[in-house]
Amino acid sequence: MLKKYNFYAGPAILPHDVLVKAQKELLDFNGIGLSIMEISHRSKDFEKVITTAESKIRNLLNVPESYSVLFLQGGASLQFGMIPMNLLQGKSADYVNSGAWAKKAIKEAKHFGTVNVAASSEDKNFNYIPKNLNFSQNARYVHITSNETIGGIQWHTFPETGNIPLIADMSSDIFSRGFNTSAFGLIYAGAQKNMGPAGVTLVIIRNDLVEASAENLTTMLSFKTHVEGKSLYNTPPCFAIYIIKLVLDWIESLGGLKAIEKINNQKADLLYQTIDNSRLYKGTAEISDRSKMNVTFRLSSEDLENQFIQEALESGFIGLKGHRSVGGIRASIYNAMSLEGVEKLTDFMKEFEKKVSG
Ligand code: PMP
Image (cartoon, rainbow, N blue to C red; front, side):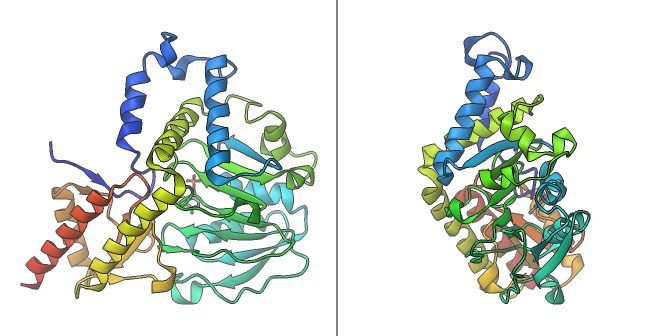
């Protein structure tokens, strides 16, 4: 069978070793003669999985004791609403409008208070990270999207917000690089790009924000419920959490976030160099804000883009079509995509350019 290189934006590529391990353990987890999918979420065996996953996350991201680590459902999209529902309480918050995902977060926050758009890059179709941030004095928090999966832009340094808690949607770049967790009040991320399968959302929240959360919310939408229940108030997505644990083992085996970041830089550099050295491909993002996870570019016509996507597919490169809202090409090069995979893609790109340029 033709070797497949998976560039989907999400759900996305998982480390091969993780899939092999999961397959091996699928029918008999830990020698108990049952699948991890068919045991109680309150069993010793599952408890070990979830507590190990949590402690690995705490280690990798240096999460202080004063934060809670939660495994929730509803995707990052539920957090767009759940965060303001818990934290806004009719007050106002600052949001940076950096793209399609930030925009969705803003839309949901408006149900629960006032949104001050501290900066926006909508004037240039979200091809850059806004620089002049107009934070307000009385904001309950500042919300950013660390990597815009559709626009292909990424914050390379995070804004200083002083005493105002910084909240980040890190769905598409969590675990791709090191950062200072203590600089954030809350971080959230859907698992299905860099962490595991769809169905579980990681939330890391500072405990004073949990304590200050709204009372009398419907039980499942209250952070307090999940902190008190240690993510086991109800049945969590057990299998997805188990896969996260395997992915974290894999990250550790490579040498942690520093090592991952180094490989991610090499992959992104190679791909952007190929784009910049060609006459056919044009990157869509401002160079300084280019995403190292989602590399977006265009060809000179839609016809040529369709031909590129089709021929790439025939050569084993899957998932390169840009998001339906913006078109073009997007190569998502999450942690599990190897440098070799990016090399193969860039070889293909050069060959394609030679061919169509005659
Ligand atoms: N935020 C970002 C940055 C995303 O890329 C996505 C999904 N592509 C979401 C939020 C929404 O995530 P979910 O589908 O898990 O709700």
